[in-house]
Length: 194
Image (cartoon, rainbow, N blue to C red; front, side, top):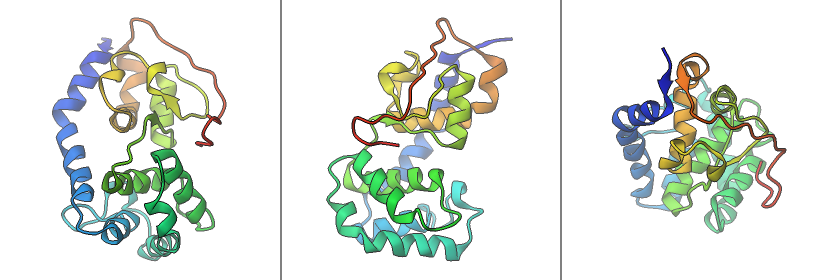
């Protein structure tokens, strides 16, 4: 039985959206930029525990990430948009083994919440890339929201990323799209976002 994409988006809104917003609100309300940066870099959630995406990373690896980000904190704090923030974080942690594209995105999203810098594009990493491919979107990304199916466009970019990751295993076999889209593009180079 095929499930309409609308139902998947509705399911996300019911089951996951409030938790995702609560998590980001924790970073929005953090008393200081340094505290928000440290919690984001160490993958600390609102309950003081490790964020689920980074649960397998060693504490020493996360501490190296925190130190790298603290060393560029002024650049991070003065980023003009999410893309610049993402690139600063990516470049700062690139020498650290074990911190990959998911860590970069999640950390940028958390720090961005504190700085009120939100992604306007859907960034692809392992899980979201699988979900995007299952829906017929191919390319390196990031994807423009306007390029995505209209049902996904009901959500902001960071929640579309969440949907693609959470529901990736359902998309290939269980989703019915009225008009599948295929996007073939290389890296989005207009702003240097990768």
